[in-house]
Length: 479
Image 1 (cartoon, rainbow, N blue to C red):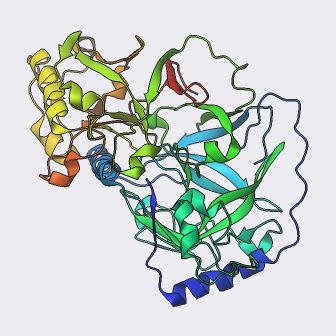
Image 2 (image 1 turned 90 degrees about the vertical axis):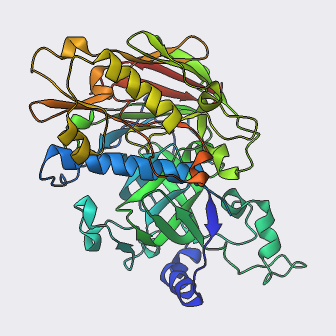
């Protein structure tokens, strides 16, 4: 997911510059602290208040709708440091609107804010200044007037990123320098800021200016970290920490060799349950081994004409089986085609796994055939937005569910627990938690065909081995 230079009015740009001007004239940042001997650092995070849902169908309907909206955006996305030898841990919490959040601290002294962890995008940004405004954020149960924001003038280490700063190119590309028209090419003096950015997500958008700030961990500082200071957003109740493959992502700016997580079940949504997101420095990643993992290589989608797709973690999905029977999905949907479209990506920001209709219908049909002794739950399908849904008799159906397995290149098999692909609704129905887009839209034919969402990643240890360009996974009960 990449960025376009925002069509921001002069008044908005002036307001942003005025609000954070004090950050550009701040005293030098504090020196980088030493690294503690501990092998991991854990940051605490407080859970949010649970968003109310009148019935379980409404919650599933919201998650299904947001997953489809997210998929539409990922399929049509467009663009216009210090290190430590110790892994860094920070807990992940699930939330009722489908994402997992982490806590990060920026500035000197540090200001700690919540972020949604997103492997489908790369920019890290936070709500910024006291005048930050979030439109249409009531859905999240977070009062838009009380969203935690970063206050630049309280930090001595931040400054507005200049147009000539090479790090401005992390977001806009190296060609951005040609647009620095107000800069003195002879003396090199330049007071022009890096252009305003606008990031579009499936559920909303955000805009602001880029800052150079210090990212603080308890025993580690990352200086000159590029972070977005967003002053206006729609439907984004908190900041986003981009963990994608772009140069502006958190893993890239920190020089990580790998990162991993184990997502707690969504049954803990909005409860004080969490698991660890582990960050491993690139220099140490070759020495820190994790046993029992199946690996599959990341694919580089170099044939795509859409620069934004380069941020995605593509994997080589060889086949899908239901109840041991191979679903004959076209191979051109499982891996990228010659035009760069198609293929399978892993995305922590998508809730329910998305499949294009030609794959989804085959999977759904196989479940329908193997579960033909159970009647369809039409009311559950209409109210949840999911299908197929089945009626069941409590205590008798669980043993009859066919197993859903994703088979990857390298021999790894992701054998999903039942709770990862079927959700029980009420006392008498169950629905498959995989979605497709039924809207006829020629544009939607582009981009990845399958998006493995976080619901299907629950209770799996997932490792993004950036050094060796591969994805590792194993079943594990996450705390």
